[in-house]
Amino acid sequence: MASARGQEALESLRTEAAGLPGRISLVPLDVTDATAVAAAVRHIETDIAPIGLAVLNAGSHRPMSAESFKADDVAALLNLNVMGIAHCLEGLLPAMIGRGQGQVALVASLAGYSGLPSAAGYGASKAAVINMAEALRPELEGLGVTLQVVNPGFVETPLTDKNDFPMPFLMPADKAAGAFFRGLQSTQFEIVFPRRFAYLMKLLRLLPYRLFFALTRRTLSKR
Ligand SMILES: NC(=O)c1ccc[n+]([C@@H]2O[C@H](COP(=O)([O-])OP(=O)(O)OC[C@H]3O[C@@H](n4cnc5c(N)ncnc54)[C@H](OP(=O)(O)O)[C@@H]3O)[C@@H](O)[C@H]2O)c1
Image (tube, rainbow, N blue to C red; front, side, top):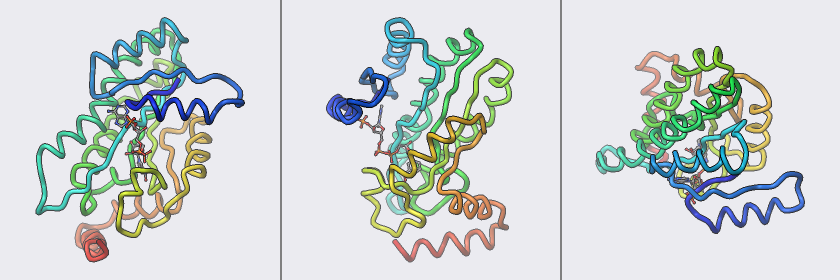
């Protein structure tokens, strides 16, 4: 089952996957619409199949400088990146908990670890997703549901095609998909890729602020 707003891209995904094992059902959906998400989950559970694994991946990025900071831009990012996931969880969790089994992966980002220049809205939204996942994981474990958080670094996609700054450890989408897929086959809490960049970002958040800002300030001059 694949979902997004654009029917055309969904159709081309299905065409690309023709000949591979299994079949893809398409459910066009805007995850910011709570009513539509609830109806879509009901439709899938009733008419297609019980949902065993859900990957909540829909998200976007809008760079924002201090000079162009707009609350509306922050609200739009939070609405998609955080509330989109919350709407899906509200629909999915009762069914999975009822069956005592299921797996859900929330796609956040390494940008959610720490506040990074130009990512005030995006980073805040992804930090919220990581926090939400940390909060829910222990309880869901006891209810038979595996909740995972996926923290990618830079991956080549239409989203990062828009970036005009050097992206360290930029990863091709197919390599990222492989690491993502291997992570989903485990029950580990956090799925990260590329690993070296993830370790550096983990280290960054442990630094004292004086050192932390000395490093993040340097990225400003490269933009
Ligand atoms: N690329 C990276 O370097 C990177 C790094 C870290 C984290 N991530 C995260 O990974 C996820 C995917 O990113 P990406 O790079 O693949 O971005 P992308 O190329 O822009 O794809 C975003 C996907 O989300 C769907 N989407 C957007 N708004 C939606 C909505 N309201 N309802 C339902 N679907 C919606 C889009 O389809 P429609 O537009 O047709 O709806 C599209 O399929 C995001 O959560 C992003 O924050 C990406």
